[in-house]
Image (tube, rainbow, N blue to C red; front, side, top):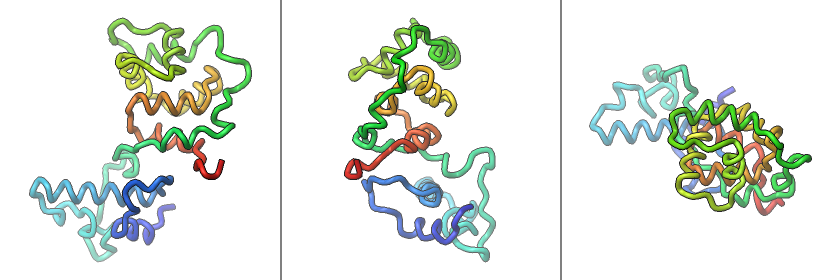
Length: 200
């Protein structure tokens, strides 16, 4: 359940820039509200007309006009997220791939290529994609391939990259970093495996 008091506190007292920790749901929503308010001011709109920030009930309280959002997407998933640094994924559990080594065939990768690289020129084979996902230095084209695959991947397919393709969490975190994506669902999924470096 959303903690409104914490949400309002996070709106008026955002965490410092560059703080390295997992933000709360309330902090994500507060950041979205601040960005919406900034956008309103930037384009000359009146935030009161849109019930944004302290001008709406979500932040301003029940005496303000009702805040509303497009309900097909939770507000905390509206703004991009930056993944935690790779050092958060270097603990032993993240570095160890599932037992068995890479599979001989790659049905998960075949499916991802079909789903996300349709129309991509000179599509990689599943074997190529397996190598790209494990690469410590992908080329610019390979980073583009990672962007297309990971930018719209379904969370259960991320899990299958660990369990079926037998990538380590670190390899997948590195591929997500190389791709440059900021999709909240992917970054949140990855953060489930993070451990603060000082705690390792």
